[in-house]
Amino acid sequence: MLSTDYLIIGSGALGMSFADQLLTETDANMVIVDRHHMPGGHWNDAYPFVRLHQPSAYYGVGSCALGSSRLDVAGFNRGYYELASGAQIISYYDRLMNERFLPSGRVQYFPLYDYQGDNRFVSRLSGDIQQVTFRKKLVDATFLNTQVPSTHVPSFELCDGVRLVTPNVLPTFAPDFKSYVILGGGKTAMDVGVWLLQMGAAPESIRWIVPRDSWLRNRDRVQPGEAFFKQTAGGLANQLEAAAEATCIADLFERLERTGEILRIDTTVTPTMYRGATLSCLEVEALRSIKDVVRKGRVLRIEHQTVILEHGTIEGCSDSLYVDCTAKAFDTRPSVRVFDGDRITIQMLRSGAFCLSAAVIGHIEAAYDDETIKNELCKPMQSPNVPEDLVRRALEELQAGRRWSVDKTLHRWVAEHRLTGAGIGQADAAAHDPDADRIRKRLREARPKAEANLSRLIAELAPESLRH
Image (cartoon, rainbow, N blue to C red; front, top):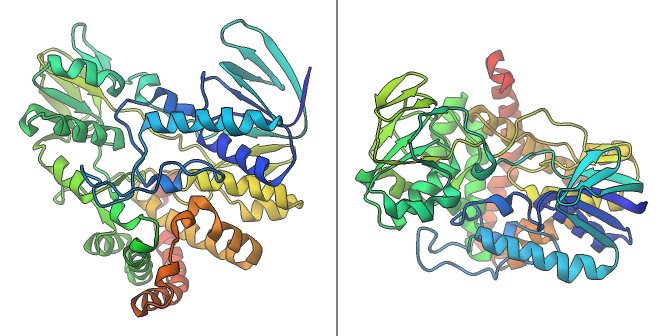
């Protein structure tokens, strides 16, 4: 029987970030179990042209940078920090496992094993069963249950002979077709649209079935480093001032869009979805070139001559390649306590900062003893789904920042951690810049007002919106 300090279920981004922090701050031993054949979680199943939404500086683990903090000079991300590809991320985690985790002598790794509960996991190849006892904690790094197109089962019916593929095989099949139908309105569908356009497909050859339009984060406002301090911190100041002054949620979104903090592809359509997708303005402009956009709800059935939707039917495209982008990224089930006796459930603590959240949970586990204090510092956020969730997450973000700032040691630790973007000099060069000082003053003055007004706006939400 195996014995360890921590039994970690999942070697994806969250499990690896948590384990890396324990390797750095403790002498604990770990057993890591994962159903994939390599570390990296859902990235093992991702489509070949996928990239991070945000700069690589915010992703990975604390001990090792992902990428080289390079500015892209071409493409739709030009002028911004590099976005790691899926292949680069898989290679990164593979190197971490083989060059840091396993050589430490403190990590045992069991790929292609399914965890079955009761401290038992079974090989997906041989059926071999391993039993383990842990001295400290079981760590669930799979709670968010990331879904990707290749492992997603479509919820709609498909007539025999209709060609439907996932983005994973799109590069193989796309050259055999002259027209394409993208199913879904989320980030994967946007990636597919951008990729087709980059590969030379004419906008007129693409039909896009969009069940719900989405508000988008502007990648211009999430760049780390001193060179981008004014637009990143200035953008945050814009957001806080909008949150402090908005008379209602609709007014808040108008203010955020006016200052470029959020974007939408079609400015004539009010989005009903928000999941934190982050795009550049160049990507948005490219997607606007697709004019054949269908907004009649979700797909129910695809036939050769007809596509049946929730709110009507449209003519089918029998010679087109349909691309299924309808998988949801994350579950929206209710959060649970992060620390609960001998169990840790890794969840998002700061909006969109999954890897940093896991690292913070690892640090809190290593540095604090009292479970009540641990949970007070690690209040989980749910993944957003509807626009109102942007407002809820903004309030929770301010509350989390205030809780962490009271603990000066934790505040300093987070500020200096690589996954905050601190590894490339967040604002040091701007320390004596009058413009930067004015931005800091705006941030200080707007924070308490924003927190108070956001609380009021959320309290006024219709009861049905609270169920999302």
